Image (cartoon, rainbow, N blue to C red):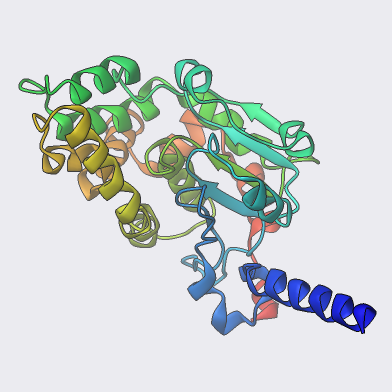
Length: 296
Protein backbone atom coordinates (compact mmCIF):
# COMPACT_ATOMS: atom_id res chain seq x y z
CA UNK A 1 0.00 0.00 0.00
CA UNK A 2 2.82 2.38 0.92
CA UNK A 3 4.53 1.70 -2.39
CA UNK A 4 1.29 2.36 -4.29
CA UNK A 5 0.82 5.63 -2.43
CA UNK A 6 4.38 6.69 -3.18
CA UNK A 7 3.97 5.87 -6.85
CA UNK A 8 0.68 7.73 -6.97
CA UNK A 9 2.18 10.75 -5.21
CA UNK A 10 5.13 10.81 -7.60
CA UNK A 11 2.81 10.60 -10.59
CA UNK A 12 0.67 13.40 -9.20
CA UNK A 13 3.78 15.54 -8.62
CA UNK A 14 4.97 14.93 -12.18
CA UNK A 15 1.56 15.77 -13.53
CA UNK A 16 1.48 19.06 -11.65
CA UNK A 17 5.03 19.89 -12.74
CA UNK A 18 4.13 19.16 -16.33
CA UNK A 19 1.03 21.34 -16.06
CA UNK A 20 3.08 24.34 -14.98
CA UNK A 21 5.60 23.96 -17.83
CA UNK A 22 4.95 26.64 -20.42
CA UNK A 23 4.61 25.58 -24.04
CA UNK A 24 7.25 26.91 -26.42
CA UNK A 25 5.90 28.58 -29.54
CA UNK A 26 8.34 26.67 -31.75
CA UNK A 27 6.84 23.34 -30.58
CA UNK A 28 3.23 24.25 -31.33
CA UNK A 29 1.27 23.93 -34.58
CA UNK A 30 1.75 27.02 -36.76
CA UNK A 31 -1.75 28.34 -36.08
CA UNK A 32 -1.16 28.35 -32.30
CA UNK A 33 2.27 29.97 -32.14
CA UNK A 34 1.27 33.63 -32.12
CA UNK A 35 -0.81 33.13 -28.97
CA UNK A 36 2.30 31.80 -27.23
CA UNK A 37 4.68 34.56 -28.40
CA UNK A 38 5.01 35.77 -24.79
CA UNK A 39 6.94 33.25 -22.69
CA UNK A 40 5.35 34.40 -19.46
CA UNK A 41 7.89 33.72 -16.73
CA UNK A 42 6.94 35.48 -13.46
CA UNK A 43 10.44 36.79 -12.77
CA UNK A 44 11.37 37.83 -16.34
CA UNK A 45 9.49 40.81 -17.79
CA UNK A 46 8.57 40.99 -21.45
CA UNK A 47 10.19 37.72 -22.57
CA UNK A 48 8.99 36.86 -26.06
CA UNK A 49 9.83 35.06 -29.25
CA UNK A 50 10.56 37.24 -32.29
CA UNK A 51 9.33 34.55 -34.68
CA UNK A 52 6.36 34.59 -37.01
CA UNK A 53 6.59 38.09 -38.46
CA UNK A 54 6.04 38.23 -42.21
CA UNK A 55 8.48 39.92 -44.57
CA UNK A 56 7.56 42.02 -47.59
CA UNK A 57 8.29 39.06 -49.89
CA UNK A 58 5.98 36.72 -47.96
CA UNK A 59 8.49 34.77 -45.86
CA UNK A 60 8.27 34.51 -42.06
CA UNK A 61 10.78 34.81 -39.24
CA UNK A 62 11.63 31.41 -37.73
CA UNK A 63 10.39 30.64 -34.25
CA UNK A 64 12.68 29.57 -31.42
CA UNK A 65 15.87 31.38 -32.44
CA UNK A 66 15.44 34.99 -31.28
CA UNK A 67 14.18 35.91 -27.81
CA UNK A 68 13.89 39.45 -26.43
CA UNK A 69 13.40 40.20 -22.73
CA UNK A 70 13.74 42.56 -19.81
CA UNK A 71 16.00 42.26 -16.79
CA UNK A 72 17.18 38.89 -15.47
CA UNK A 73 18.39 40.15 -12.09
CA UNK A 74 15.46 38.58 -10.18
CA UNK A 75 15.38 35.27 -12.05
CA UNK A 76 13.81 32.65 -9.77
CA UNK A 77 15.05 29.07 -9.72
CA UNK A 78 11.91 27.70 -11.38
CA UNK A 79 12.23 30.30 -14.13
CA UNK A 80 15.92 29.48 -14.55
CA UNK A 81 14.88 25.94 -15.40
CA UNK A 82 12.26 27.21 -17.83
CA UNK A 83 14.81 29.50 -19.46
CA UNK A 84 17.12 26.55 -20.01
CA UNK A 85 14.42 24.95 -22.16
CA UNK A 86 15.06 27.64 -24.78
CA UNK A 87 18.40 25.90 -25.52
CA UNK A 88 20.21 29.23 -25.70
CA UNK A 89 23.70 29.49 -27.11
CA UNK A 90 24.18 33.19 -26.37
CA UNK A 91 22.74 35.66 -23.87
CA UNK A 92 23.35 39.35 -24.65
CA UNK A 93 23.08 42.07 -21.99
CA UNK A 94 22.51 45.52 -23.54
CA UNK A 95 22.41 47.43 -20.25
CA UNK A 96 24.96 50.06 -19.25
CA UNK A 97 27.85 49.16 -16.98
CA UNK A 98 26.16 51.05 -14.14
CA UNK A 99 22.94 49.07 -14.51
CA UNK A 100 24.82 45.78 -14.63
CA UNK A 101 26.72 46.67 -11.46
CA UNK A 102 23.51 47.66 -9.65
CA UNK A 103 21.46 44.65 -10.74
CA UNK A 104 23.60 41.79 -12.16
CA UNK A 105 21.91 38.98 -14.04
CA UNK A 106 20.96 36.08 -11.76
CA UNK A 107 21.79 33.05 -13.86
CA UNK A 108 22.71 29.41 -13.32
CA UNK A 109 26.35 28.67 -14.28
CA UNK A 110 25.50 27.10 -17.63
CA UNK A 111 23.61 30.23 -18.73
CA UNK A 112 26.10 32.64 -17.14
CA UNK A 113 28.79 31.07 -19.34
CA UNK A 114 26.85 32.18 -22.43
CA UNK A 115 26.55 35.80 -21.35
CA UNK A 116 27.99 38.63 -23.47
CA UNK A 117 27.93 42.29 -22.44
CA UNK A 118 27.21 44.89 -25.13
CA UNK A 119 26.66 48.01 -23.00
CA UNK A 120 24.41 50.75 -24.36
CA UNK A 121 23.53 53.85 -22.39
CA UNK A 122 20.02 55.15 -23.05
CA UNK A 123 20.87 58.65 -24.21
CA UNK A 124 21.67 61.07 -21.40
CA UNK A 125 19.73 59.09 -18.78
CA UNK A 126 21.65 58.56 -15.55
CA UNK A 127 19.67 55.71 -14.04
CA UNK A 128 20.81 56.27 -10.45
CA UNK A 129 20.18 60.02 -10.50
CA UNK A 130 16.83 59.62 -12.23
CA UNK A 131 15.74 57.01 -9.68
CA UNK A 132 16.83 59.26 -6.82
CA UNK A 133 14.81 62.18 -8.13
CA UNK A 134 11.71 60.14 -8.91
CA UNK A 135 11.72 58.38 -5.54
CA UNK A 136 12.27 61.72 -3.82
CA UNK A 137 9.49 63.49 -5.71
CA UNK A 138 11.99 65.87 -7.35
CA UNK A 139 10.60 65.72 -10.89
CA UNK A 140 9.36 69.24 -11.54
CA UNK A 141 11.71 69.99 -14.47
CA UNK A 142 11.97 66.47 -15.91
CA UNK A 143 10.59 66.02 -19.42
CA UNK A 144 10.27 62.27 -19.33
CA UNK A 145 8.63 62.01 -22.75
CA UNK A 146 11.69 63.63 -24.37
CA UNK A 147 14.21 61.38 -22.60
CA UNK A 148 13.36 58.33 -24.69
CA UNK A 149 13.12 60.31 -27.92
CA UNK A 150 16.70 61.45 -27.30
CA UNK A 151 17.71 57.91 -26.30
CA UNK A 152 16.46 56.46 -29.58
CA UNK A 153 18.37 59.06 -31.56
CA UNK A 154 21.48 58.14 -29.57
CA UNK A 155 21.11 54.48 -30.54
CA UNK A 156 21.57 55.57 -34.16
CA UNK A 157 24.24 58.21 -33.65
CA UNK A 158 26.29 57.09 -30.66
CA UNK A 159 25.94 53.32 -30.46
CA UNK A 160 26.17 52.18 -34.08
CA UNK A 161 29.16 49.94 -33.40
CA UNK A 162 27.42 48.05 -30.60
CA UNK A 163 24.35 47.38 -32.69
CA UNK A 164 26.48 46.47 -35.68
CA UNK A 165 28.36 43.94 -33.54
CA UNK A 166 25.00 42.66 -32.28
CA UNK A 167 23.74 41.93 -35.79
CA UNK A 168 27.00 40.46 -37.05
CA UNK A 169 27.24 38.25 -33.96
CA UNK A 170 23.96 36.57 -34.83
CA UNK A 171 25.81 34.75 -37.61
CA UNK A 172 28.53 33.38 -35.34
CA UNK A 173 28.60 29.63 -34.96
CA UNK A 174 27.48 30.00 -31.32
CA UNK A 175 25.13 32.92 -32.06
CA UNK A 176 21.67 31.39 -31.79
CA UNK A 177 19.29 30.67 -30.21
CA UNK A 178 19.94 33.98 -28.50
CA UNK A 179 18.25 35.92 -25.74
CA UNK A 180 19.01 39.64 -25.63
CA UNK A 181 17.80 42.02 -22.95
CA UNK A 182 18.06 45.39 -21.26
CA UNK A 183 16.15 46.54 -18.17
CA UNK A 184 12.51 46.59 -19.25
CA UNK A 185 13.14 44.92 -22.60
CA UNK A 186 11.53 47.79 -24.48
CA UNK A 187 14.00 50.53 -25.49
CA UNK A 188 17.46 49.16 -26.30
CA UNK A 189 15.98 45.71 -26.81
CA UNK A 190 13.19 47.28 -28.87
CA UNK A 191 15.70 49.06 -31.10
CA UNK A 192 17.81 45.90 -31.48
CA UNK A 193 14.69 43.99 -32.51
CA UNK A 194 13.66 46.73 -34.93
CA UNK A 195 16.93 46.84 -36.86
CA UNK A 196 17.04 43.05 -37.06
CA UNK A 197 13.49 42.80 -38.38
CA UNK A 198 14.17 45.60 -40.86
CA UNK A 199 17.31 43.83 -42.08
CA UNK A 200 15.23 40.69 -42.58
CA UNK A 201 12.76 42.61 -44.74
CA UNK A 202 9.89 42.97 -42.27
CA UNK A 203 7.85 46.12 -43.11
CA UNK A 204 8.09 49.14 -40.80
CA UNK A 205 4.44 48.82 -39.79
CA UNK A 206 5.02 45.31 -38.46
CA UNK A 207 8.25 46.40 -36.78
CA UNK A 208 6.30 49.12 -34.96
CA UNK A 209 3.69 46.54 -33.96
CA UNK A 210 6.37 44.42 -32.27
CA UNK A 211 7.86 47.54 -30.64
CA UNK A 212 4.53 48.65 -29.15
CA UNK A 213 3.68 45.15 -27.88
CA UNK A 214 5.83 45.92 -24.83
CA UNK A 215 3.03 48.10 -23.47
CA UNK A 216 0.46 45.36 -22.77
CA UNK A 217 3.16 42.89 -21.76
CA UNK A 218 4.56 45.34 -19.17
CA UNK A 219 1.27 46.79 -17.95
CA UNK A 220 1.11 44.90 -14.63
CA UNK A 221 4.81 45.45 -13.91
CA UNK A 222 4.50 49.17 -14.62
CA UNK A 223 1.52 49.44 -12.28
CA UNK A 224 3.56 47.88 -9.48
CA UNK A 225 6.49 50.20 -10.18
CA UNK A 226 4.17 53.20 -10.05
CA UNK A 227 2.78 52.16 -6.70
CA UNK A 228 6.27 51.59 -5.25
CA UNK A 229 7.37 55.03 -6.45
CA UNK A 230 4.25 56.67 -4.99
CA UNK A 231 5.02 55.12 -1.61
CA UNK A 232 8.76 55.83 -1.75
CA UNK A 233 8.14 59.49 -2.58
CA UNK A 234 5.56 59.91 0.15
CA UNK A 235 2.93 60.61 -2.48
CA UNK A 236 4.93 63.42 -4.13
CA UNK A 237 5.44 61.50 -7.39
CA UNK A 238 2.21 60.77 -9.24
CA UNK A 239 2.60 57.39 -11.01
CA UNK A 240 0.81 58.83 -14.05
CA UNK A 241 3.75 61.18 -14.61
CA UNK A 242 6.02 58.15 -15.08
CA UNK A 243 4.08 56.68 -18.00
CA UNK A 244 6.26 58.23 -20.73
CA UNK A 245 9.26 56.52 -19.14
CA UNK A 246 7.59 53.17 -18.45
CA UNK A 247 5.91 52.82 -21.84
CA UNK A 248 7.01 52.77 -25.44
CA UNK A 249 5.37 55.21 -27.82
CA UNK A 250 5.45 55.43 -31.61
CA UNK A 251 7.38 58.70 -31.52
CA UNK A 252 10.28 57.04 -29.72
CA UNK A 253 11.06 54.54 -32.48
CA UNK A 254 10.08 57.10 -35.12
CA UNK A 255 12.81 59.37 -33.73
CA UNK A 256 15.37 56.63 -34.42
CA UNK A 257 14.02 56.03 -37.93
CA UNK A 258 14.10 59.77 -38.63
CA UNK A 259 17.71 59.99 -37.43
CA UNK A 260 18.59 57.16 -39.82
CA UNK A 261 17.03 59.08 -42.72
CA UNK A 262 18.65 62.37 -41.74
CA UNK A 263 22.14 60.88 -41.46
CA UNK A 264 22.06 58.15 -44.14
CA UNK A 265 19.29 59.17 -46.54
CA UNK A 266 17.15 56.09 -45.88
CA UNK A 267 16.69 53.33 -43.33
CA UNK A 268 18.34 51.01 -45.86
CA UNK A 269 21.29 53.40 -45.99
CA UNK A 270 21.69 53.18 -42.23
CA UNK A 271 21.61 49.39 -42.29
CA UNK A 272 24.18 49.28 -45.09
CA UNK A 273 26.53 52.18 -44.27
CA UNK A 274 25.89 52.67 -40.56
CA UNK A 275 25.75 49.04 -39.47
CA UNK A 276 27.67 47.31 -42.27
CA UNK A 277 24.76 45.12 -43.36
CA UNK A 278 25.73 44.70 -47.01
CA UNK A 279 23.89 42.51 -49.50
CA UNK A 280 25.92 39.41 -48.62
CA UNK A 281 25.37 39.74 -44.88
CA UNK A 282 21.68 40.48 -45.35
CA UNK A 283 21.32 37.35 -47.49
CA UNK A 284 23.01 35.30 -44.77
CA UNK A 285 20.75 36.75 -42.07
CA UNK A 286 17.70 35.92 -44.15
CA UNK A 287 18.91 32.39 -44.82
CA UNK A 288 19.48 31.85 -41.09
CA UNK A 289 16.31 33.44 -39.71
CA UNK A 290 13.60 33.21 -42.38
CA UNK A 291 11.56 30.21 -43.38
CA UNK A 292 12.10 29.33 -47.05
CA UNK A 293 9.21 30.23 -49.32
CA UNK A 294 8.89 26.61 -50.43
CA UNK A 295 7.86 25.56 -46.90
CA UNK A 296 4.71 27.67 -46.86
